[in-house]
Amino acid sequence: MSSKARALCMIPGPVEMAEGVLAANSTPATAHTDPAFAEAFGQVLEGLRTVVGTRDGQPFVIAGSGTLGWDQAAANLIEEGDAVLVLSNGYFGEGLADCMETYGARVTRLRAAPGQRATAAEVAQALAAQAYKAVTVSQVDTSTGVLADVQGVCEAVRAHSPQTLVIVDGVCATAAERLYFDAWGVDVVITASQKALGAPPGVSVVVASQRALDVVAARKTRVPAYYASWARWLPVMRSYEARAPKYFATPCVQAIFALNESLRGILADGIELVFAAHERTAARVRAAVAAWGLKTVAAEPALCSNAMTAVWLPESIAAADLLPRLRARGIVAAGGILAGHAHRYFRLGHMGISATRPNGNVDAMLAAAAAALEECGHQIPSSSTSSSSSSGRASPPRL
Image 1 (spheres, helix red, strand yellow):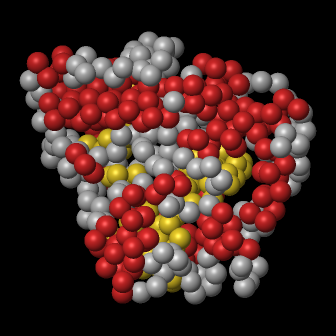
Image 2 (image 1 turned 180 degrees about the horizontal axis):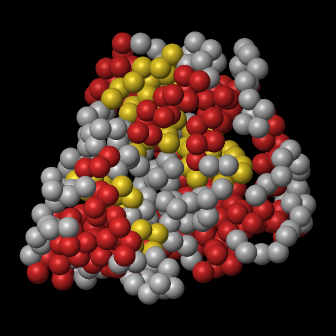
């Protein structure tokens, strides 16, 4: 790789971005009251409903990271002493549990072993044993690449505890994994701009059902937050959707311009074709991992995310050995973050335009990973090395 060449960012977010998105993020200073910004903000709010599959869910688009979405859900929906069931598939499930406890929740953790997920039957059993204000689930835990069964969780809640709210952490899933907010009965989706939504970091995105908003309105205590309070943001969101700027806190103008540009591309393709493109790309990555003689952290194909893949390393190789060799070949990948296992695996992101456009990003990532593994001493059959970057290339929804 030339010293001047830019490495591809193939971690589980932030992701590579389209040129139009980069351009939108580089516009001159613009007032948050500018009609052009009001139009872009309104389009973002409307577009997000299409992406998550809701007609009347309320998006909240606020400057901040995906973690701010945790605070929004906990601060607005949870009161001191409320029972919350947290399904934990890894690092981020544990983090969401901690956030809920910060706002006074009595949290029960339903933990899965590394590479596994809680089943709908286990969720049903937990709901039968105790009443919960909410159940939370990370659709993709970025630490493991395990895909949760959100539809099954929603079905279990409807069958056994219909008053329980379903809160989905979709930060590493939204616009890559199938989710049908209204049809499945989701109450909150938490996500962020920098993953499959294909925009720069800096925008916290939450979509709340009308039922969730009713829960907030019926609180017995004040929301224990200022910036994260939906009561303060709801008039702002409704006003911008009507193309009438309203102030509470300064919005991240350029980041919202960029998010709108990315959403335009997603919606022009059609969200179903975007889902399908991610599925094809992920299948190709998993086939390459198998050809390398390695295994995904997710224990079986049905548990594998379409947005990212976590890969167990051979016993003789640590993540610290592999990652610099990938970087030298122009690919930035991520190490593990699961407690007690971080050095034993690495993570590859394949979402956004890397999954949906014929740009060669995934080909380059797979070829570099195979070469780096071999340089670390792992033997890969030559046929596997050559085929992993070319077989089954994902067809983009549009050119």
